[in-house]
Image (spheres, one colour):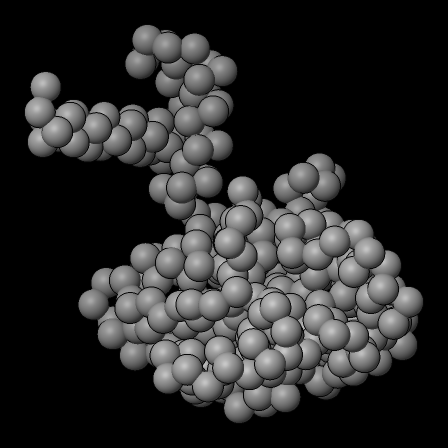
Length: 322
């Protein structure tokens, strides 16, 4: 078989899989058939139908929009806005299954962005697993002259999710051009970082990110974040804790008051500076869970963001502190 024939075969299988996912989603969400009824109709098992429905959510074939207010969530939104001087807040119910937390917050963020992102906008994107769920909940756009730009460098090795991939996925969803921060998130030294920042390609991306219409980012704690897991050694993490770090924002480590800690990693970070976030039209922080309450509060106290998207339990903790 020729390479061309192989590629045609692969494409056909991918199309067939997507068509099956779409058919299953249609039967379930529009036709109101049960999973067993769909399995019987398609001659397969209910277990496979369940997996296909889950795949539909992951791939963005199915997106969730809920047009209803929950009184406690709305009350928490108002308290967050008042307590932290925010432009806006979105609070979603905390799922019983902790593994669904990122997905729930991502749906809330995606729905919010659907309302505020406009044709011709430039969207600056951070890094994190919650952001992967955010783009899946956004409506696809076509021919709206949009741009997506990465806010920070990436890793040479990350088996899960890299910053380059996040930016690409947002750009694909918005049918926009993508601008990567083509550098490591941490340079080998402060001098190496300064050399990188002098490169024209990096300066152009930094400038585009700084003047974006909307920036979407998350904050990382010192236990579960991708940066801690894949970019730092255990010794570095311990040193950051001793320096008073509460977590990171765009790879910059901050203390409980939102101020940069005195640690050499902060002098090697290749990312938009936290002070430059004030030049962005709107900065949206997508972060939730009680385990992230400390670094989320630090980000809010530091005055870096305009809008917070979080979950009910996380919001309760944030409004009980400070």
